[in-house]
Amino acid sequence: MKISVDIKGLEAVKAHVAGLGKQVAFAASKALNATGKAIADAMPAEIERAIDKPTPFTKRGVRVLKYANKGKLETTVGFMAAQAKYMDFQISGGSYTPGKQGLKLPGGITLDSYGNIPKGIIAKLKSAAGGSLVLGGTVERRLGVAGNRRKGAAPVQLFYGIPRGKGYENAPVGIYRRIPGNPGKLIPIILFPNKTARYKARFDFQGKAKAIAQREWATRFDAALTDALRTAK
Image (tube, rainbow, N blue to C red; front, side):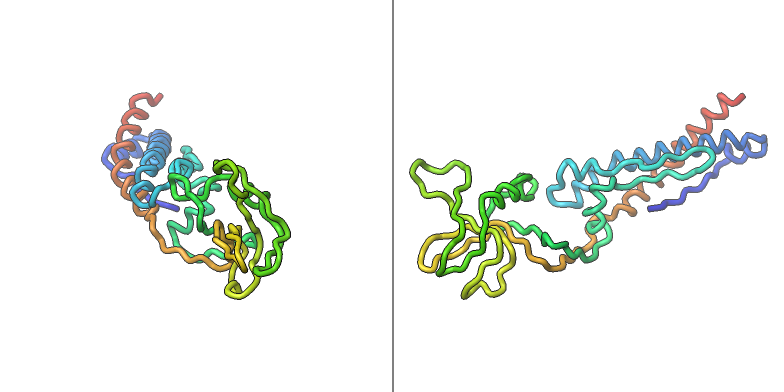
């Protein structure tokens, strides 16, 4: 993202005329970096307003990625790589095609306070489930899942894979809980459909950053230039 700002004002013109261009460039770089930090500092609150239940990890993802100096008057502000992978879809919209692992869509599972699948639960459930299941036939493995279950209760029967049988012709890969019976049924816990997800732009990162830059730049540049001229040798 690039936002242009103008170096202007009477003091800047006077400094150039007086041959103090180096001080102007130094002041500009200092003001650019201060403005960039102001943008980064404001983004957690902006993300909170635009995104439903953003995680702390997402909110702290905006940083000053590159600082200006008097030789290159350019400050870069943006999301760090980990957050940028998914926030790009919130900023620009677009389509996401998952890899062989598919999407992760929650079913009958308790989400965390941010509406996400709890960290580590997918690996735990996969390790406790397995085998290909044919309803009305046999389950290759029936394994219990550790958890708070009443004493003497039967272990939870889990299955990870693609269900087969009548009524499950289009079922995606997933982790399912099996309800015993003849033939029994499956309750999806987490599904991994291999389909394209489409996103609409929800977070106007550039617009919000530009508004902050326009508000902050002139004051910070004037202050930096005044200080640079005062201390010039």
